[in-house]
Image (tube, rainbow, N blue to C red; front, side, top):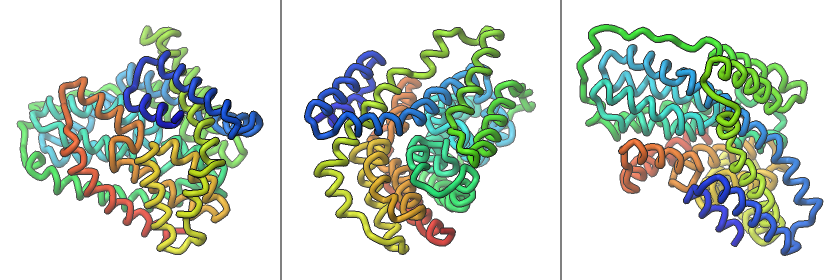
Length: 402
């Protein structure tokens, strides 16, 4: 019941205070059952704390980048390169959305990048649908590349015998295959909109990329890769970069201290920690046993495919964050290939339904606010075609490289 309350809260997305209070209440009720001891609850919170700290600080980094105009400038570069052709715009958006997701996480793509991509398409006089769906698909699928691209990856890292760079090397060919599949599917499904040709701009618009945020993001990415082999958690790097960017943004008059605190979404951090307590209790009970019975005991190709499918089902039933907390520890004894296969289902597979990931819900709310209403039928017209094909392709490549 506590988990259902948390899932309903995630779907409804109430005010921050309400979100935090429901989370604390759900965790308190769970602890009151006695299923989870205080020591076990503390272990769950201690495991989640670095991940939540990273989430809060990377959201601040992304917010400063958006206020400084980094996303808008990048979208303008894509528009200039497209020269009025919708197909070229889609290709550019794919690359841009994949890059933003990989470095700044999927939430930055759906919340901050998608609106400027829609604006670029409208300014060209072409349909905004292909670009908007490219952002959504890349928010889930491109989050495979780096440990910091998705909270699911960060939660799984302690169960993987991989460094930051090692994770990227294994996942790079997997992502390459997924990108091709996703791009081809969108080209086919939106062929009518992509056949439109707008009038190319009479001149290329000058683009002024904000240097400080751009350099800060690059330094942050290098810091992740360089310090990971030394055992330094990513949140230390993102915290330093966030502090530097907030200081710069304050001097530039882009935000105040209150804006920075709100950008960190502290209520959501409390919500995620509460979710960790609730899922930890479920994992020790019947649900953990039921899932363990479904998982295979090997890492053959067929077994990896089964793992990815089970993770997909759990992600869409419980959201991918809850499913990660449940399924990854159960797969850890099978080794790195099994955990990575689960991440394929938790990331790619979460794009199957709106409830698969919080990013899907944030994407839909963002489009609704812009007057770009998306029906369930249209959403599933894309997701039910793209997700299974991309998932099978990803598992096949993972089986080759591991």
